Image (tube, rainbow, N blue to C red):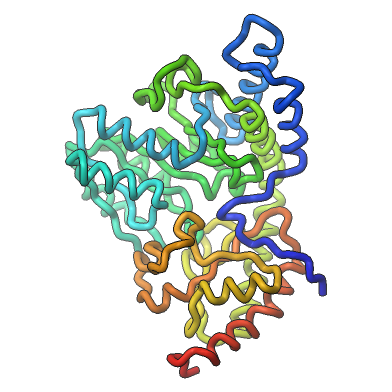
Amino acid sequence: MSDKPIYMDNAATTRLDPEVFAAMEPFFNKHFGNAASKYYQEGRTAHQAMESARGQLAGLLGADDEKEITITSCATESNNWVINSLLLNGTKKHVITSAIEHHAILEPIEFLEKHHGIKATILPVDERGMVSPQLLKDSITDETALVSIMHANNEIGTVLPIRELADIAHEKGVLFHTDACQTVGKIPVKVNELGADFLSLSAHKFHGPKGTGALYIRKGTRLEPFIRGGGQERGRRAGTSNIPSIVGMGKAAELAGKRIESEAPRERELVEKLWQGLNAKMPKIRRNGDPEKRIPNLLNICVAGVEGEAVLGYLDMYGIMVSSGSACTSGSLDPSHVLLAIGLPAEVAHGSIRFSMSHETEASDVERIIEIMPDVVERLRQMSPTWNG
């Protein structure tokens, strides 16, 4: 069996697609103009490339108007923009989110609570990672400015009922935001079907460049500028546009749109093969998240009797790259807040492993993991003073 490296951490980041790199390359040197300099050809070339990329992204999202897409550096920036703008600049000072959100949502809200007197309601989730629509409805008050619920969880893969949740918010006159980092490019994400007023994404999650993202802002929705000092992005985000990366994001969006129909079922099949193979060969493991309402490329398991970090270290020796949860908290010794939120004890959550695939993942990669990982786990269990089989 091949000993080539196996990358199964695509939820953290994806490899830049060669076609994306080829699209970007001319804009590093040959077409180097500033997109804001429209009085000469190089500037116009850069501007046209940027607007073309905006159109490609709008097409992937099914936006009514390309102007609903504002370029940012990443989804973290987009998330912070929505939260800060609506809660610091408006008269309403209450925000609702969920216990399984990415830290790019939870930490800005926590900061505003601590330093600006914002009130936050953190909705619990069930054992699958689902938010209760009724609980959301009951939590909205006359002071609620924003509801922010992620489209799919980055650790367990559960896809939440965004349309239903957004409709509840809108019935109460409240704006709705969703972080769609883990769904854009993996499943069909159409903004009009979701009903969100704001949607955040990062290009590097679907084989685009790092350091580039976007915020969808529904036409007619007011949002204060995030960065002032120039007219870029229709005055909403000042600063010279990163044309090579924007072009790359557009190309990645175009490629993702072409792949979704065939890739989603293929990756779902590979995930099921991996789960069935590991479950058959390793006792006392559990699968986390909703088994049906989930993104197709992700599998999260907890393995009793081992530390997830130890498993990762051993798998890395075999050239197998996976994670124990969110890459943004990989240096933390604390158990995943997501796994705690779905009701797992801390000692169980410490044994979590996340596999996340892409169109580059092959069946042979899955087969190799099924061959190697049970031996790794057995070795670690034998070394554990608490493992009793």
